[in-house]
Image 1: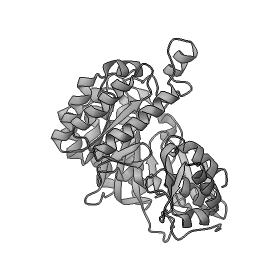
Image 2: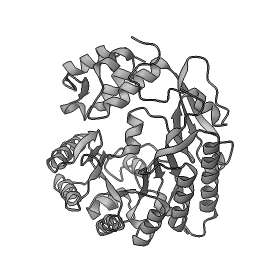
Image 3: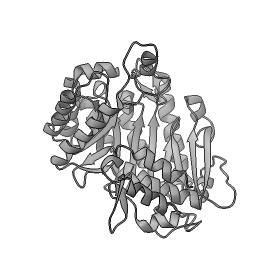
Image 4: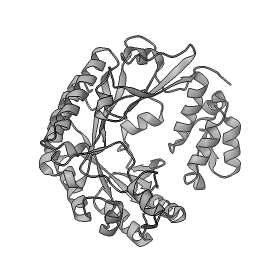
Length: 408
């Protein structure tokens, strides 16, 4: 068992003071309304064009990215991801924001530039503006192609609007992904199967599938607590997840991560960077970053960790006021991890992927015994390459992760 770096670790090794992070996340904190299930940090805006908070955020985001590029923290990037919130809620401000940020970080030729978009705030004109700004990939928050399910979720769009958004995004020339949600109260297996089949009929080459969660503090959680709504059924959600695996893989969309399916070559490069332990920097209210200590020290955010730290995670506080302070914003969380902790985290992250992790990596992290126990329970399968989730393991992944992480 190793207490320090391992040969296979895919992370920032701080080999030189000139090393730059190649993956940038920009958190856009605005939505036109709040969905019933959402617990993300968002600010509601009514008049997108006139709201002064939009301009304030855009200017600050560009300022932060430019400064971090000048400090040598981020540059020559491989991926940029604009998430939220609802980036498409920025309307005409989004294209220029993308263009300025992509230029500041000197995106490589062929870089993946992703924007999350909702059907109610997207059309051909907005997609064309994104394209001019440098966007290559759009993730559409369709959630369902059943109007009753969308109403339960508190979405502003209907199924027809979701289909139009997907068609418009493809027409403009983007790689297109769709988010779909299952386990929604009142959602039937037949409805879920129709949604999956519709996604395939639309020619989607990337689909993300998520079960509805009941998050404390959300409108849905309050409604369930007060008896005004039913909560999600975990057993039904599990059956729907199994159906999604069957339907999507039969159509050659391979599962490459717990919640993600894609035609080979269409996987999300940005999200995959998280799961392989690559360093990244997050910009915006509540945005998270992860990197080695020397790179963290170059951010100007006043980060310092004791000797033995090999990985630093830090999160910006919520609200535009927090984002306005300091180099990245006022930080509300800072975690300094030892080499051992980072090794164990790499195993947990790697197990999210269909490829799994090698036995060598698990042994170096000191968690080989835990994986062998999960194998005995039928949650992991072992091959010549190592361990990967299998069968019920996909549904009980959090149990597997918890058993591994407990050994850090």
